[in-house]
Length: 77
Image (tube, rainbow, N blue to C red; front, side, top):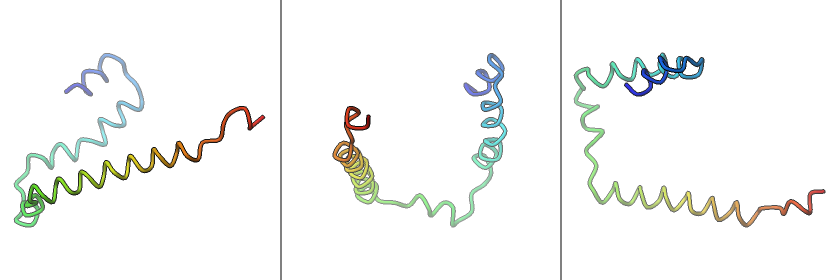
């Protein structure tokens, strides 16, 4: 709804493209799910929390690696 209102208020090619590309996803949210699709969400809280810890740990390691490999701007000239 927000994207639609923003597209109407400020027409933009990118907003229209995002809106058009999201239509199939919106329709799939309201259709009946198969047994396999419902089983996809059978994840224990321990599995979810461990994946969250690994994901945010990866983000932290990547940020740390970016800071280590940063070249000072003064040495580039």
